Image (cartoon, rainbow, N blue to C red; front, top):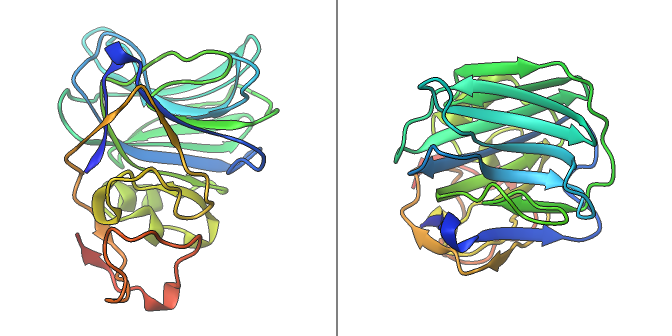
Length: 248
């Protein structure tokens, strides 16, 4: 299962509170996404301030078709300053891996399916992070609703390498990529069942306007002790010495 969103119903997931996954650069956002629409911007994962619509530490998503191409983007915004990295070309009704690597205030990269990338060097300061949203942008109001599905959303407090992003796009779980820097992970289904829990940081998402569930993109997950059922809640940290990579 993965989370399925209907943009006409303004469906999304959100967490707010003290102690966001990251509050400054560097960091990385990643997820799998699938959409049936290319006529507008669609947010997959958003991280920013809840008291402003123009204070976004990081955002990854599908964007409106331009010149026959369907770009993905990784964006930061502070007031009138926007830094946007863009890369072509996603297909409709197809699972794609989208990753934003935010190395510094003036260095961001978007990577589509582990290989196609675009960069941006606009300097955008970090300030006042207070929320996470999946399926829409957040802040004072919501926009850029997703028309499709999102799975395996994750945040690292480091800039992942190209090789690490390629491994994610090859189907490896975020739990297997730079685990010491993984600070938030929402599987949104898959091996862990239909729930919106953050398995690493405990920042569980609240669903708004009743998003549904759909098929999950198959992944390679770390092995776990047999005593733990696949749909059981998992603690904030996994015992890494028990891992044995396996497909699920």
